[in-house]
View 1 (cartoon, rainbow, N blue to C red):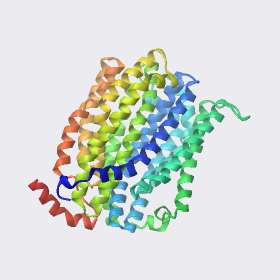
View 2 (cartoon, rainbow, N blue to C red):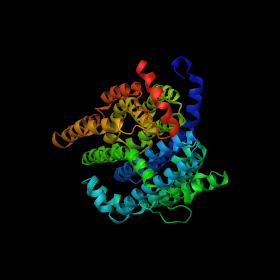
View 3 (tube, rainbow, N blue to C red):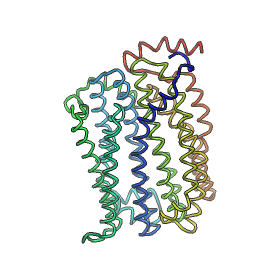
View 4 (cartoon, rainbow, N blue to C red):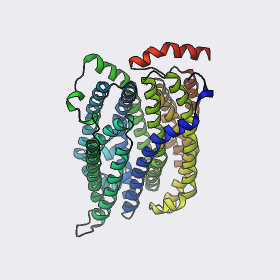
Length: 467
């Protein structure tokens, strides 16, 4: 494929849908479960909603710590899948699993043994700290289970096994909802545990998720999850290559995670109504991110697989079209959220000032979410093709030189309204979009790790220079 005129949109959309829809449905289920959680917890009061929301931000920090290895792992999984290199897949999964579990266990220790330290970092409100400590002390046990499931899901999706994680998510969400009803309110003869019941339900649901993934993979004779001896057969050269590709992504995710923590520290020192509004917003934001995750996985698989197989023109043409397709779908989701935000916020327990704050925040977010998700989609595309540097540098530079100073000054020094502080969180997105598009059309983000891809690279770059 040397020209865009030969590109088949119908085949492309069908291939994207096969990957994106199951992933989007899985994330939609997870977000729906979080919304039901929030609805059930809402009966315990807005302060409780805010406390659980801040605990979720600590989970997001853990997410930032391990997501660099997910991104690096999927780069190798998809390219080795395209090259039909089973040993490469097994070896890369073992490296990814070890790295991710190290992060998960560290976060679990912090949550279980030092929850007070965590909560004092995120807010100065004593009433919120007390509830958060109670929740974190239990929910920390879920972290290793959740991250183990994430590692398995990343491998399954990269090798085009989308349904297993989806079915596991269904089982996990249903378990979580049912146990919330039983444990929070004390049904079926059990005592009412309140916030501790919500945390325990999360732990059990995480265990169900991991168990279902393993059971279905075993039943379908999926090989790569069970090659334990092959997972840890590493050479120094292979480990160096893996870490070299993962390091920029890891730096990106960790530094962005720290930056987001600073933002959350600023937001956690606003009014209690604003903290509750932000907590509910994060739940609804999951709907947008859930749909985006489908495109992220489609980019990783469709582009990475083509690069690994040496079909570089195909990878380039696919990547160009993922951005407008992502934008159209995210716009539709945002418009739906705006249309339904009133009933949603009421159902999630907001009223009065917190309702108004969250309504305004949602309107602002929906205006920038399309650009934000397109930036993420482009970055994930670059990573799957082997370029883990360009998107990383742009995101870190703009966050630390533009976003964080704006958020800190507006929220901590100038005492600006919460809506102004929130707008500052996304002030860099339009500029980065332009720079990411320029890099996209250059084609320089295609950097294969397989022999097939490397062999095809000189001819591809020669065609790009002539284009």
